[in-house]
Structure formats: C-alpha cells, structure tokens
Length: 230
Image 1 (cartoon, one colour):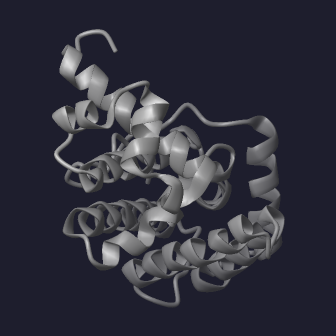
Image 2: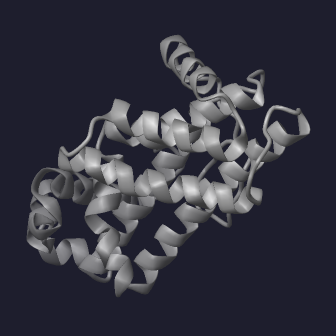
C-alpha cells in the first residue's frame, strides 16, 4: 500500500475485514461490531473512516467487483484467437470468482442493490463491464470469420452474462458443479455464435491446462473495474 495515506490504508483494512466477515458468516453476520472486531478496532473508530455500515459494505462489494474484472483480464493473452479468447472468458466468468470469496461476496450482497443506490450502481457497472468484454470478443470473432451470430452481439453478450450470473449461484448453493455450468455456458455460446461446441470446449480445456494468459486490460467502463478483456 505504498503511496497511500494512512486514512486510505485504514479504510482498505476495514473493507478487507468486512469481506472476511461476510465470507465467513454471511451478510447477516457482517455487523458493524463484527467488522470492527475483525479489523481490531472499536466500532465508533470504524465510523471515523466510513460514515455507515452501508458505506463499508459498498466498499467491500466494489473491491470484489474490481477483483473479478482483474481475473477476467488475467485469463487471456493478446496472441489468442477469438475462439480461444471466448473459451478463456467463459471459463473465467464461470469459475474464476470461485477460487476465493469474490463470487460469494457479490452474491451475498446482490439483494442490497434492490434498495441501495450505491450497491445498485456497483452491480450495474460490473454487469456492463462483463457485457462489454463479451461484445468485444464477439466483434473480433466476426471480423476474423470465426463467429456467425444468430442475434445482435450485444444481445448475445447480455445473455451470456445473465446465464453466468444465474448458474454460478447454483454452484455456490451446491446445486451444480463448475464443470456442469461451464458446459452449459459453452453450449449456449456455441449455439448463438455458430461455433462448434466440442471445439469450444476443447479450447476451454486447453486454456485451463495451460494456465492464465498474460492479461489484456482493454476496457474502461467508467470505473467499473481496473481492467478486463475483450
């Protein structure tokens, strides 16, 4: 945290404490007192750095949103073909947030976006950034002659993001495996883009075995995240 003010360092520590508590005890357990205890502070001291519990949870959700977009960026490299890049983005979008608490935090706090303006803004920016990632991959695939979409690229992109959102929730709830979700999303993408499903899944497996790409930070969705792919 070099270069940050002491106040900003402390704010980040409090947000990290909120993430830890919410991941361990759920939203219900992430009270001001619990977060303060996790951060090694008194509750009234925490409110010196954040105006309210809602402000703290919004900061925690924003940190998780940024991290998910970083993971998407890290999943690809510039030398990938559009089909291979699509496979990498699908895998990252459906599994990357499951190797730590990123996805769990985003889902734990999603209901807050129904009534909290700041949570709604953060969730909306994340969705827009994810959609833009897919749109750019699809545009590259069309230009390269690899994709033959049956719908407008924006509609396909939004559909894939929506399916990811719903199916990853099933994984977190223990109602589906990551492999099942990956197969469903890849199958849907193949049908919508005129790509051979088996080839897409083969590329998905190859990408997974070879590890993460070098990262291609090419989006800037109005502060939605630090970088993503497309």
